[in-house]
Image 1 (cartoon, rainbow, N blue to C red):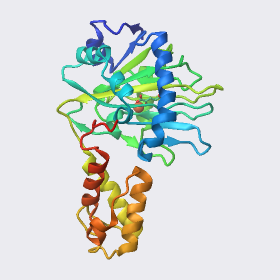
Image 2 (cartoon, helix red, strand yellow; image 1 turned 180 degrees about the vertical axis):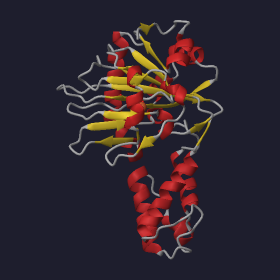
Image 3 (cartoon, rainbow, N blue to C red; image 1 turned 30 degrees about the vertical axis):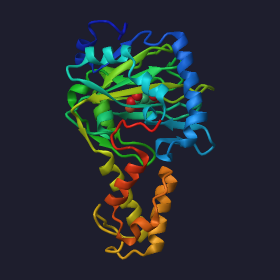
Length: 314
Ligand SMILES: O=C(O)CCC(=O)C(=O)O
Ligand SMILES: [Fe+2]
């Protein structure tokens, strides 16, 4: 597959046909350097104030990912909405795109392959209007977590995924074998990019080089898509805290701790876990044992300002 320019009028047609479009020189070398510098700044200056839910380090302290970067930093928020990208998205699809998130998964030396997956499987939405713009911030070749795509796989819709204990769900091997003739493994010069559909099967290889390999993803979705909102997500996370702290199997988002047999010590443990993961201290006296997961989730969202998916705190 060949690379085309960001303003090529054929991008939409290629995206519909192949589910992935390779774009040449999306960022020039200065922009690549600046973006890398901004990622370092974010890591050192912004990350200490970001809730743990939106970044991860490997056990030995090497950065593993930073997600939802548009929420915490104006530079990245602006990056995600620059005109060059907005025009690209608008020209590529027939729906109106809106910024969904910015994220980075630096591939450290020695990292294992990222199994083949579809973005839409991990983040379901209705209708399926979802694009990733994956931007290489290094020369990305076969050896440093080279990218893999299955051309045309977006036309299959959602593919069966299997769960692996060590990783996210991945497309089953049998299907990948059948799709082998459509597998592509392009080399990406720094600053080039792949624009791909939420249903396009993709992944990346092991990094067998000595260096870290950097990329940045800008995701957009249709303005009218419905996804699980923060209230559903956080209510469900807090229900899990309730279950684990009480040692019970079932807890709906409206069950209160008192109804489930919890006392003040359980309240304190649940609030402690919320604080650890989200850096927000909910006042104990406000809820006591009358707290339900939904109540705590709503208060958490209020206090963080995460009242909409792209609400910003910076
Ligand atoms: O950077 C990678 O290796 C994988 C990227 C990816 O899965 C994505 O952009 O959705
Ligand atoms: Fe992905």
